[in-house]
Image (cartoon, rainbow, N blue to C red; front, side, top):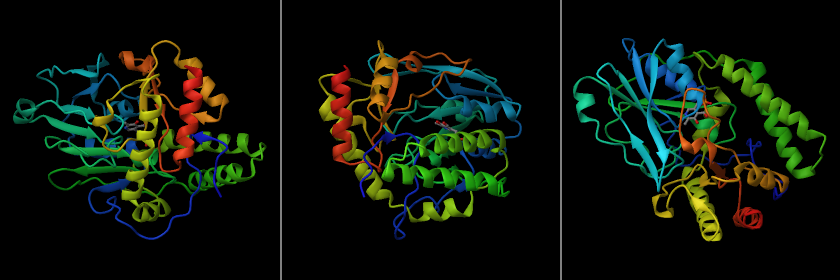
Length: 338
Ligand SMILES: Cc1ncc(COP(=O)(O)O)c(C=O)c1O
C-alpha cells in the first residue's frame, strides 16, 4: 500500500524487517532524547561554568545547559552566500557547542588553542547522524536526537570520542508516554491508508501530548526497549540512498526557481533539503500545507538568539518514507507557488 495523502510531519508506525548494518548500537550510548544526550555529556564536565553555542540553534539545545547551571553565550551564525560563522572564544569559556546543519558539509574551524587550554567541544550530530562524515576530529563529545530520523517512541545518542561516559541515565520512560506515542504513530499509519479525517485531530493531539511529556520529563531517562530494538534493525545504507536520491530530485526540479541553502555537492546524507525564502516563506509554507506537504522550519527562534536564517529557512522533506513520485509532487507544488 502506498501512502500518498500527505507528505511530512511526524513519522507513522512502520514495520521493520531484518537486522542490517545499523551503527546505532556499535558505538556510544542510546538515551531518551537529544536533550538527555546533552545533559549526559555535561555531567562529564561538572566544573563547566560557561558555554558558547551557535546563534542558529533551537531552544531545546539551550535548555540542558541552563538546567546544569551553565551560563550560555552565542557565536554568530548567519547566511550570506553560504553559511557564515564568527567564533570568538572568551578566556572564561569552558565548552564550545558545534552544530552540523542538515547533513551537508560544513567544516568546523580549527579549535586547537581552545583545546590546549582545556576547552571541551561538544558536537551536535543530530543532522549528520547518517552522514559518512558524521563528526569532526577535534570534538570531544557527540550528541544527537535520533527521533528526528526514525519512527521510534524516543531516542537520543551520546558518545565520548576518546573514552567512556560515566553518567549514563538508566530510568525507563513512563509507560503512559510510550503508549501514547505508539498509538499516535499507529493511528497516523491507519489514517494514511483509510483517509478517515476523524483520525487526524486525534493523532495530532496524541503527538502533541507525547512531545509535551518529553519536554517536561527528558532528564535522567534511558531509551525504551522497543525503540532500542527498532534502531538495531534499521537499514542505514538504504535510508542514506533514498534520502540522497530524493534530495537530488528536489535539486534538479527546483534549480531554476529556488535558492538552496547548500550547494548540491555539499550534500552528505540530508535530514531535510533546506531552502531560503527571504520574502514569502509563510505563504509558501501554507501553500504547500494546503497541498498536503508539511515542511518544518528550523527553527522557531529562541528569544536570546539572532540569525537571519530563522526568518527565511524552509526544510523540504526527503526522507525514507517517500519515493520519486512524492518528490515530483513537492517540485510541482512548489514551482506553482513561486
Ligand atoms: C540539532 C538538535 N539538537 C538537539 C535537539 C534536542 O533533541 P530532542 O528534541 O530529542 O530532545 C534538537 C531538537 O530539535 C535539535 O534540533
